[in-house]
Length: 53
Image (cartoon, rainbow, N blue to C red; front, side, top):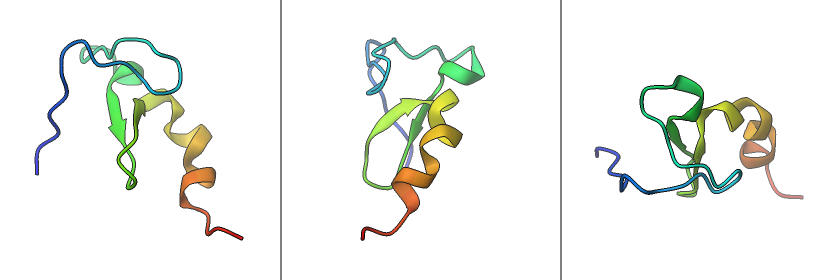
């Protein structure tokens, strides 16, 4: 299924508007459905993909 994001959508972390022409500010969706700038993918990956204790 394609990712459809409104042009005025913002990152859930930094609240910046996504910039499709800048790789670090392109939207990235995680399995739970939250969307954030691509630059936060590696910073947050252990948090989102670790099993709950």
